[in-house]
Image 1 (cartoon, rainbow, N blue to C red):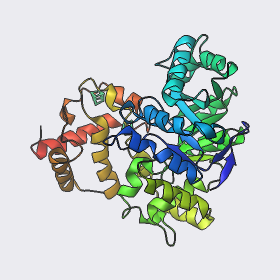
Image 2: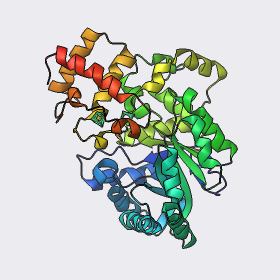
Image 3: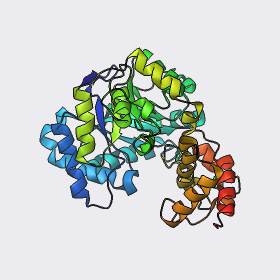
Image 4: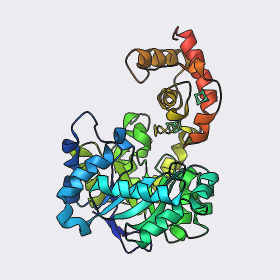
Length: 377
Ligand code: SF4
Ligand code: SF4
């Protein structure tokens, strides 16, 4: 395992971080909890979760594991998060921290994220007088939090706005081998400011493992595109921790093996990727799911956007997209859809929430046409 200094905090963190957003929720929490000590035994010492992850089970799963790991508490780091809109006063922010501490069975969070800044207004909301940040500073003064950090989905060139006043010790952002051309400015700005840089979505929300054939150009000799994507993030000197959403011990083994034998990307590797990554790659839906709850029409927006990925990634024709839509309505992502694409009122709320800034309404229009032609809805 490679270990890196997290900015100026003095924390020495593993280059692979345990992401608590991909547990298999069909199994009991106790079974999932076994993954944390296993990851620690392999060298991972950075454990990231948040309220709401995995049907809101993730913090409870962590709590079971961290209770068992209490005797080694000073050997690993735990994070959680709170959104400025949900905790818009100092008092609410403190209550959120206390709740996370209780669920996680720890006395202190090593890192706490002002979570999911998608536009600058949310940053200002967090920083307003008597707001979330003020509450978090108080928590830090009282020893409930060690470090206040920020998670953002802002485009690369806007991240520097969050860094201007040195409010945060580190930044969590979505950067990977497919989108780095568009996100790098943010990574470099955080790095230049001496902050920790934690990268989420290293596999682009599962797109890379799912489309390995199409993305074969990512891989160097003797590796799969998925392994190459992990190697890209893990070996990158500007990235402090690569957060991988963990479902199985196999995920831990793969990521740790890559970190153990880490070969940095050469300029030739990077040139090959750059030459192949089309602009479309930055317009891929990562499946983060932030859009769907905003739809009053109950359209499963994220699932629809995953279907649209097939058009972008596999270059499917209109005729082939009819098959994609039919399959997904019968057996796949849209089998339980409460509403179809044609019911979109174009209100734009999902777009405002989209972490990738995708033009969702335009895509839904295409999807609605394919559904109509296929006789769906
Ligand atoms: S634009 Fe359409 S899909 Fe998006 S939230 Fe509004 S109604 Fe729902
Ligand atoms: S459309 Fe945007 S917000 Fe919704 S799942 Fe995809 S990337 Fe995430």
